[in-house]
Length: 209
Image 1 (cartoon, rainbow, N blue to C red):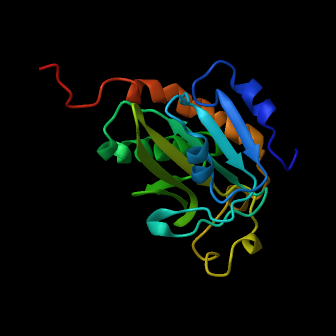
Image 2: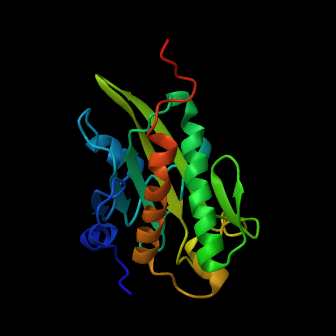
C-alpha cells in the first residue's frame, strides 16, 4: 500500500457525494482547519475535505498541540454548512466521534470508547480526536470546520516521550498496518450517510411564528 494519500483516488472512490465533493491533499500545513478556513468564502459549497500528510501546528482540545507524524495517520478537515445554531457545535463533535467509534468497533473489532468532549480511546489511550470550529460568514450561512486526527500506523517511538503512555495507534492495537486511503474513504462515506439527516434541516427550536 502506498504511504501517501492520493486525492484523485479518494475522490473517485466516493462517487456522488456532498462530503468529499472536493478533495485536497497537502504535503504539509500548519493545521488542516487553518487550510480549510483559508479556502472558505461565502460561496464555497460544503463538502471540501483537506488532508495533510504532516501538520506543523495541529490543534487539539484547549489549545493543546496535536502531534501528527508524517504519513502515519489521517489528519484532515471538512468544510460544512450545517443548519444548526453556532452554539450547537458540540452536536457536530458528537456525530463525528460516534462515527469513528462505530467504525473502529464494527470493522476492526476494537473496543473503542468516546471520552467526552473530543477524544476516542482504545484501552484508555487516545487514538483519535475531533476539533470543531464554527465561524459566522457575511451574507451566507455560517460554516463549520470539522478537524479530525486519527493515529493509524504509528509505532510507539513515533509519539513523543510525553505522549507514549497515553497515546496509541490502530496499528499498535492490531499489530498490523492500516490502509490509510481505504480508511479515509470508509470514514467519509459513513459521515456522508448520516450528515443530511442530522444537520440539513432547520435548527432545533426554530419556529415560524
